[in-house]
Image (cartoon, rainbow, N blue to C red; front, top):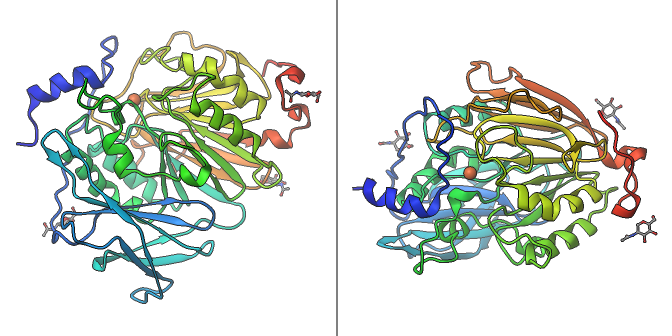
Length: 434
Ligand SMILES: *[C@@H]1O[C@H](CO)[C@@H](O)[C@H](O)[C@H]1NC(C)=O
Ligand SMILES: *[C@@H]1O[C@H](CO)[C@@H](O)[C@H](O)[C@H]1NC(C)=O
Ligand SMILES: *[C@@H]1O[C@H](CO)[C@@H](O)[C@H](O)[C@H]1NC(C)=O
Ligand SMILES: [Fe+2]
C-alpha cells in the first residue's frame, strides 16, 4: 500500500537526478518506523536553534485538536514554564499530513538540560542547550535517508556527546512518498529530540510536480522549519544561526542564487553583519558540492560556485560542508579552483547512509587540491576548541569503535591569520600553493 512502485518511478523522473555512470554497491534495506502510541501523543519530535537563547520544538500529532503547547523545566516531571506556538498541515496528492506543531521556547540557559512534554500528552523528552563558551562540538552528516546504514550512522553519532547536529541536505529520501517523511521523523526522533538538528535542503527535498506543485519543498518547509525569520531571511531554504563563537550559514542549492536573487542579497547582508570578535568562526553548508573529484554529480554545484564563491572568500569563511555525493572528500583551502591559504576548506560529507548506496569512483589521479577521499558511510565531527583552533575528524561506520578516526585535520580560524585579514576582493591576499 505504501509503495506504489510504478507511481514512484514516474514521480522520480521529475524529482531526482539519475546518474547512471557509476555503480553504488550494497545499499542496505529501508527501515519503516510506525507510530505505535495514541493519536494525541507526539511523534517525530525534533528541536532546532531558534535565535539567541531559544529553541524550537517541532512534533506531529494525528489528533488535530492537540494544542501547540510545550511544558518544560530543568528537572524531570517539573514543568515551570509553558510556551504556545502554531500548527499547520499540508496535503500532497491523496496524502494528508498530521498536525505539525512548532513551538518556540526560551530564554534558555546555556549548557543546561531541559525536560519537556509536547501538547500535554505522552512521554517526556529532554535536550541540552549548547554551552556559552568554547569548546563546542558539531556532528555533521548529509544524505541521511532511512536505511540500516542510517541507523548505523546515527548510532555512531550518538555514541559520543556533541552539541548540535548539522545536515547539509537530503533528509528522508521520501521522494514524494509522504509516509516516508513520517517514518524518517520517527527514526531520527531519539537523536533530534535531544540535540538541535540544523538542516538545509537537498534535491530530495524538492518534490515538485508539474502544474500541481510547481514550487516544491512542501513537506520539507512544513516539517523542518528552521530559524529563517530569526536570521532576517525570507525563505526557509536559507538562514543562519550563531552557536558559541561560530556563525553557521545554511545555503540553498535548489533555489535562486544569482546576484539578483533574494538568497544572494540575504547572504551579502548576513556576511556583512558578522562580528568576528564575537563569532571568530564562519561555516557554510550547501548540498551540491562546489569542489568534487568524484564522478557522481560532477559540475552540479558549479553555477552556484560561480555566483557565490567570491563572497564567501572575501568574508573569510572557514569551512564549506556539502553533501549530495555519497562519499567523503576533503579539499585543501581553495578559491577559484586553486589552493589558497585564505579560502575555505571544502568537505563533502554526503555519506550518511541513504538507500542509493555509495559513489565509488573518483578521478584518477586525484587533483592536487583534494587531500582525502573515500567512499564509506560515516559522519564528521567539528570540535571548535577556542577562537583560533578547531579539530575536524571523519568517522566510518565500518569501525565498531565510533571514536576511531578515518581522517582528521586541525584548522586555524581565518580571522586569526594576519595574512588573511583583508576582507574585500580589491585587496585579495596573494594566493599560495599549500
Ligand atoms: C513502538 O515503537 C518503538 C520505536 O519504534 C519500539 O522501540 C517499540 O518496541 C514499539 N512498541 C511496540 C509495542 O510495538
Ligand atoms: C587554542 O587551542 C589550541 C589547541 O589546543 C592551543 O594550542 C592554543 O594555545 C589555544 N589558544 C588559546 C588562545 O587558548
Ligand atoms: C576594499 O578595501 C580597500 C582598502 O582596505 C578600500 O579602500 C575599499 O573601499 C574596499 N572596498 C569595498 C568594496 O569594501
Ligand atoms: Fe542529493
